[in-house]
Length: 389
Image (cartoon, rainbow, N blue to C red; front, side):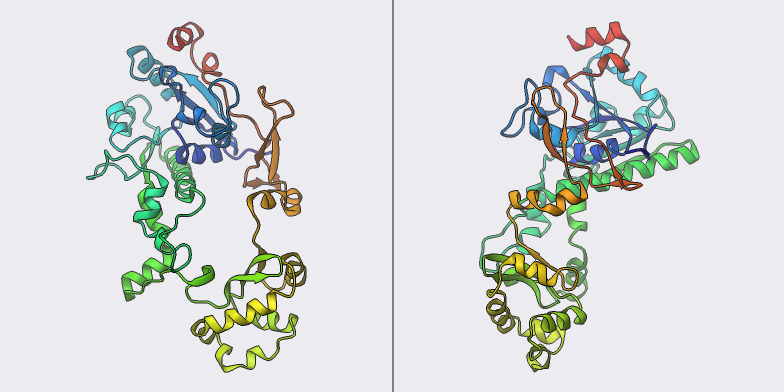
């Protein structure tokens, strides 16, 4: 990436596991210097030992997924020496961020109130499960719990199935992305005014916010979108899974234009004239009968054949397994796969590239740091050695 929009931004991160590191990695790959403050007595970020596949001592493929392009400083924040070193780092930082339990920032004295005397322009950003200064601030919490309590599991999956979670930790990822936006917004304000601020984001708040228009319908009309067969859209039809000759596809006729084009391209000009399917509302009301017709029609060709026929005209996608998704030629075309150099992985480590392009370029993949790898760079050499013991 020739231009790094966040170059010169320095962030001190007290982070573990997924949501927080995901958010700061987005910033690091846009040029921010993200310094992970890791306690050697605790083995650093717990994600260093998380998951199935380890990469040498204190490293894992899980860790690399969330901490590329960052720095690592070994520092025991709870010791007097470590605290002094941390406060020295705060003097030159733009933000101090953490994804600790809601009551921990106050206990560790990493709030804006604790740090503003050291650096009035500092932004402190907190990501927690349920937020701070409320009845749940001491509660631990994770993505799947939020999916359960925010209603995700009752709008996901088939109607007769048990409550179903997303296959991925989307609440973590969305919260990390929202948090990153909050951090950058706070820094912009601090640079303009000379005064820092405090940013708070929680998994619960973001999860609830993601319920979006179904939540508005529920609050105003008492309408429960529930779960429809084939993962169908709650108000538009046909917008759902369809059976193909060799598997499944997802068809999305979100407008009358797409429905008309589908019927033309498949030689089913009779369908728009059928009173049951004349409008989106009619098709939604008669979704069962329409699904039966679509299944017969789509079963005549493979998913790949349907993609070739409908591509660029009617929104359609084959349903791929994860390996198929990664091997998709379009992924290679747009450069969403990367190989990063790693000392414990001869030939490099295959990764997903940054989803953000600047001037048409993605950030070059850079491995996450070894525990304490950058301590001497950011701390005085003699003190750094004593803290790392």
